[in-house]
Image 1 (cartoon, one colour):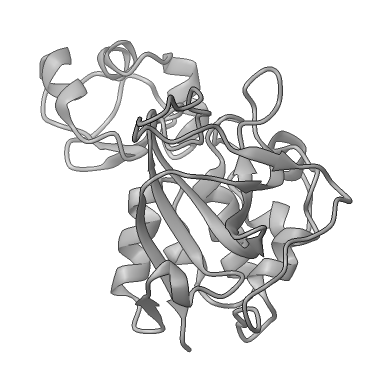
Image 2: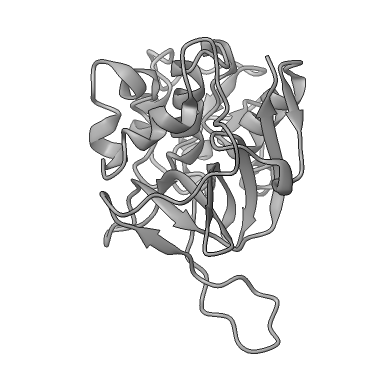
Length: 245
């Protein structure tokens, strides 16, 4: 299969192997390496043996928050979000937080504030234990939200997804979740957004000074890696999923 055809597949965090593909060819087309693909896909024991029809995890997909440039007067382009530092006053909430059988995903996420995604993934318990270690440190938004939902008992391990659109699709299929407008959101509801660089997913965290706040794994470190933070964002919202189980 040509590299152009490989690049044309949706950037959703995984790739369906086609007849004639090689791991080196896929790596070249996707801007990664064979060793990175092997690490992200531990089921592959031999780099020279991959099978058509199976899916590969592709590291480095752009399901991540990217700060936009400040908007000019009259411009519809979203402005850069401001980040709430750990320990800062939390936003006021709009009603009770979303609850799962094991707790509130919002409260679970709030307990992770200030942690870097890279170190969180290595924790042996809690949210970190449900995050996939192979996911690059700059694209953990869906990995983190999925783990919080798992910890709250709102989704099962098989519904965990490391791509925004993948998690969004899984929640659409789950009868315990319903799409609601942002005006009806509760803290802990899953908010998927369209960003200049791709997609981003966070959880609603209430209102502050008339602006919605969101908590999630965001690219706020100087090196572009993600840290769990609470932010105000102004990106187009694709969906808000509320747990009704």
